[in-house]
Image 1 (cartoon, rainbow, N blue to C red):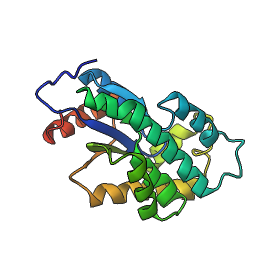
Image 2 (image 1 turned 135 degrees about the vertical axis):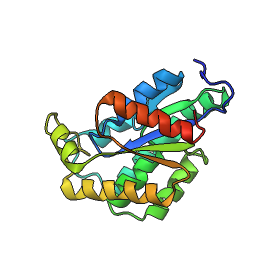
Image 3 (image 1 turned 90 degrees about the vertical axis):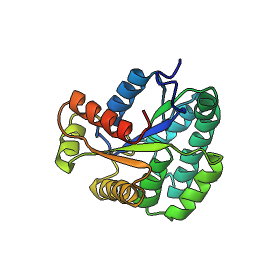
Image 4 (image 1 turned 45 degrees about the horizontal axis):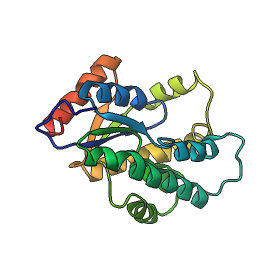
Length: 208
């Protein structure tokens, strides 16, 4: 698979946001449009898929927050080593549905673990490979609630409103603190409209 924009260095583009914000749809669309490798966290490798089964299983009730953070970091370490870094080294851009920033949001802000410790753990686990740019799909709370009401919830999705509000606040805090690496897109309107806004924002940043 080749990058359609050969004059640009390969980019590692991560999509982040609350549950039900539309990031999976938009990540897949962007990857197709630019000829990038499409992947995801958790579960972007065979090993990661087995870790994901534990993390998202609604029958898992006693998983400690630190253990959860370690499992997500293990999934990510394998993902970076097996998928992301080889693709970038081969000159291919990567589009990922979630990334290291989800651990900062979910296990840091959401589970209320020390965000600095989560960052340090993942800096080691990723061998310093972090996204070039983060596309944060910021969606109105009522839109997310309506979308989530239409599907069966996994372990994270069923974690409760207070948890998800902390996660969303975490994403918003990180986006505001690092505007050089985060693109905040208000995910309102049709899929095509949001897709166009994402492409425009990334082009303005020189990523595309």
